[in-house]
Amino acid sequence: MKKFTLLLLLPAMIIMVGCKKKYSDINDALEALIKMQETYINAIQSAKSAEDVAKAINDYADSFTTLRPKIESFEGKYPELKESKEPPEELKDSFQKLEQSAMKLTLASRSISKDHISSPVVQKAIERLVKLSRPPESSAPAIAPGDADESLPIAPGQQ
Image (cartoon, rainbow, N blue to C red):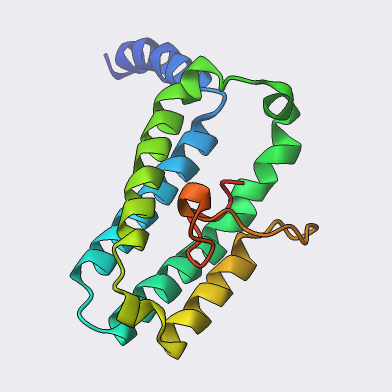
C-alpha cells in the first residue's frame, strides 16, 4: 500500500517541481523590494526627528545593499527582459505593485519636513542612498521622486 501511494505521489511531486514559473526568483525579489519600501514608508511617516528620518533612510539603504546583487544578477540571467518593452505576463502583477509602492515611497519622501531634510545627518543618509542607487558602472545621477526634488531618491535600482 505504501508503494502504491508513493507511486501516485511521485508524479504529482515531479509535476509540481516542473511547474515552477520561469521568473519566480524575480517575483520573489520584487516582493522583497516592495516590503523594504513599505518598511521605509512606515518609518518615514512615523519619524519624529531628523535622526529618525536618517535611520529610516539608512535602514532602507542597508536592506537594498543586501538585495541589490540578486537584482543585478537578473540582467545576465534573463537578457530577454532587457529587450522587452513590456514585462512578461508572469511579472506584470509584481511590476504593477512595485510601481504603486514607488509612488507611495515618493509621497512619503516628499512628506519629510523641511527642518529634517536640511539636517546634516539626513543629508548624509540621502547622499549614501543616492550613491547606492546608481548602477555600479554608471556615474549617472539617481532618479529623484517626481523628477522635481533631486534631494530624495526613490527606490534604488528603478532607473
